[in-house]
Length: 251
Image (cartoon, rainbow, N blue to C red; front, side, top):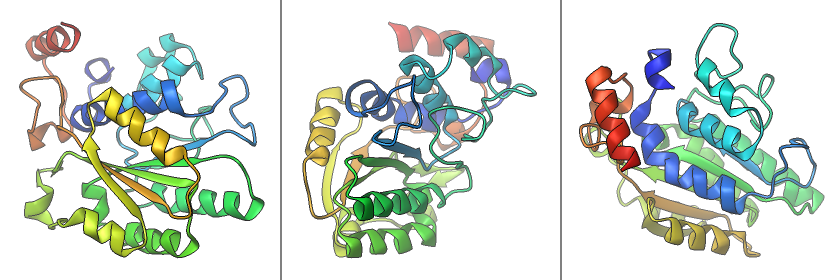
């Protein structure tokens, strides 16, 4: 998709791919035939630039034909660089500007709490995104409200555009920060499907506090020349790199 489009964010797509796949194909209670069903679970991709991972999951889950992935980022395509709920079924809210999706997810969870609804809210953030003040305002409010229907997953790949998160704006001790805001916190391997599913199952159990899953991941996971390289936050492989990446990801 990224090679054909000539643009994209492969590093973050690949660090998040196992998380997104686990949610869409094993955890979320959703129905592509009725994407606005009131009782559906809600997923918000707060790190909205990682549409490669999101759109692939939505297509695989049946929200639109997989052939439409060929239109990624093309003129008049529904598959924008940032997800748009007006265009595409399965997208809960428009994201892209960092720090916006998570507060919206908190609002959705508050609405569910008020309505005593059965739906659960899952939101995926990037660790670079955690530098946004709106994230921590929303986290504080979620802890105050005791939003047991809310789970945030932090894609902790430790890299952002151009540098490491710790060199840019130190996040550690990250787990303690979330706990201080009233959250339950677990730290896991974000690329192990069994561990991911166990963490998501635990998150779905009845709780009186919101849950933060810090998923330790590798930026560019599965592609040797992309792994742990900040330069692949965005970028497009050339023909030789594409052949290498495809061989490594499918072996």
